[in-house]
Length: 539
Image 1 (spheres, rainbow, N blue to C red):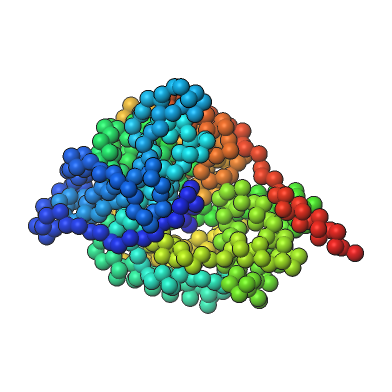
Image 2: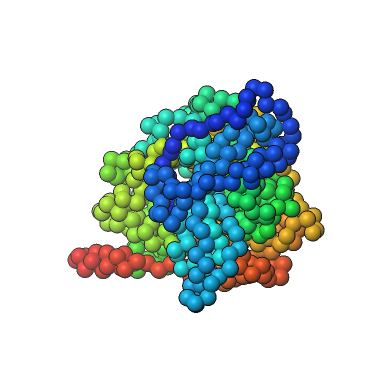
């Protein structure tokens, strides 16, 4: 399952045309090993730099954010062959201390950010500097975002016509029938074929190792001798690959909501672990709703809240809300509550209103955004290509069926939807890589900072522990009894203090530190008013 991209609401991403520009005669380009190819590409990028100017209009960025491009090889074994142009955005450091207007803050170079995915763009990232929690970083660093290879304006990858993106209503059976499974298997085969037909031989080069190599070329193009990087979710995985491949180029790295880098987990078993973790987070949400039964009226126990949810699922299967919200759209909307607990009030209110006869909040919450179909298709294509290319997957449907059937008995909420998301990898037509055994020895890598919430479902906590073990000298900061995905500069001042100290001063706590979890959200005033109105109408 794709981990939700952080800060994606900062602006809309529109696709531009594919830009594969030959640098010399591609057919005659000599082969080399990828490490040497990366060095060649980085030297070339450092010499060229990045010509920052006004951003493309379709990015919708203000004038204080400028854009440029950096060329990276399609395949690093031929660094003089075909190139991909990655779109890069930057807001230069303000040098203004938000707490002391008379103090000029010295610059610390570029802070490069990746929001995860795979398939998410970071081009909108520089906008984050206006948010109060980020202003100290924005004073000291140039905030740099970019669209990784295949994403949006950076040689966009596609696997199907966006018009075929499901618009709803759709089903999402917790325990699918054999007929439904057969239909999804055929759909996965068709999707894998579409990726191969549209991308051709280039398909295999959209992978995490190349994302890490691209990051080093970007570092050089920014003319940074050493990289300061923050990656969230999937961004932590190829960030860890970068630390493994280029430890001498690291200045500071923050891994926010760390992926488990154990090669045995990449990616089939990682997704099974994720489905199991979402069941726990789904329970957390239902327990919270039950605590506020006086507002929502959905049940006084987690089991009763589940019964209310299943009642809504059944009704939507029989009669989709607004003609387009079926069980599939309901599932997708409530999955977001597993990522971010600040979504809990809106989801609970929509469920409550629907059962009281008002479908409007649910329709507004769960309706597919047809204008974003091209972006969604591109995101799905990059996600699928990267995960399928990164490591071997079971190619026998019987293995998938067995493993997910077993898991769904104890974790029914997300198991099968997650399986369908990844099933094209069973029928992938590009060569697979062997997952890298990420690790660094003592003294090889400067100290790095890993952030994790104990109950994070998208990147289960065991992954942070594993990354901490594998990156020598790393420090793990844990948000206890919390499950929001992506915790840097969120509501927890303790976590934010550790990130500030590290990125601004290079200070870290001991090998491990803990922060108490942030408070649970509260029901909205609108939900309370809705409940009072409904109560007043009762005879």
